[in-house]
Image 1: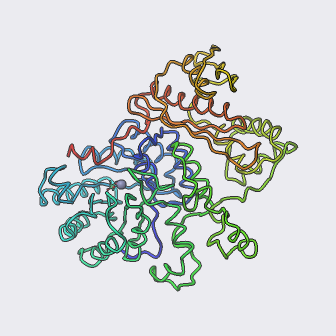
Image 2: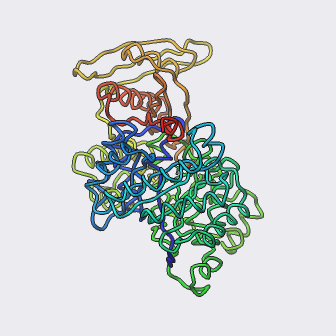
Length: 538
Ligand code: KIV
Ligand code: ZN
């Protein structure tokens, strides 16, 4: 099936959420899905409905709230098993346009050691389950898992059977991120040339990044006929992650003169090659990073803190004379606002609300009031408040999980010599205030120990990081932490000009999520088993 533009299939909420420790509950998934819709993705893979009641609920809610007539198509993953496909069909039902994505492995190594089935058996299951999925929806995607290591001749036959059974998209995963761009491009070319009936389906690719080649392999696939790319925000995903949405989209945007002819257009055609609104990229990246607790490395292409920073004197000199000497894309194209100073302590509520609107935030009255109070406090402490500060305040203030435990006060005393000591006062779910104090190896340790004395939720702190939102001694510090309990990970995030306060609030944010998960055991909390593991039950 020839298409003159690329389909962007986002799997942040499914493969992305399989990143070790990236836990998302249903509210957070809906929030990300809303942003993905603003970003303009064509398909949202909202989860794996059969994996748990929480995952089912998340897919169903995304389908209901984001899968509107003019919104993206909503998809659920399903093993090539009837019960999985039934759950997927039910979860996506509220969406105006829904897709079932069913998969089964085709490599000999998976057939022999994992599925313990013969090639003819797997081929028959693929055809039967695609037909079963087709009995629920018109739009069915089929993936031969570990296609990158499968025998191409056998792969062609399985794909033919899937297309004959009604698959409208055939997705070719390099599940273990093993192939090089030339090899993967060759595999896609072979499929385009040798699979009977391939013109009736869209060729999609799903590349993992184990050798750092996911984006390069996806681009090679486009050159050879792929017209759907599966990708995630910030490239998160199983192990080393997936093809990063922002990187592939910006590669196509910046190098459109190279890619246009591949899509049958004149090299200088101006129409974008996909439907993504690039100005929403940075905001999407920040949201996913905050909600999953997975930090973006500073040198990450497109969305890293250094992506547009020039350190060397020669580079700075060149950029001052002409930006194009060392920059291939303008930060504003991806929604990075050059840290414009827009508001100060005399700015009123209306100016604040207007700026939020310009940044793409629509808050209800209660959230707006809280955010405005925080902004005023910040403007009192900092001379100038940048867009980045405002974004940090918003993501800090607008909590998706109800605050069972609320921080009222935190005070530390530390120094050399001395014993770092913290006093913490907080309100619990019963509305009762509690105070306690503790001594620690440092001020943050003391705060966490005091909180642990007040909230008895045993956990292991597995990550703690502080990042500065902007430069300068009065900059806000953003704290991201992750805690683990019973194999499940919960992230916490907070921003404040006082990093001890930010540390306390980030810890409480994670504990509130843990408390919520214990109180609602069926609610999605990201404890999804990887389909590779689930497939053993086939
Ligand atoms: O990596 C993979 O093979 C997958 C499939 C389920 C598409 O994620
Ligand atoms: Zn994958």
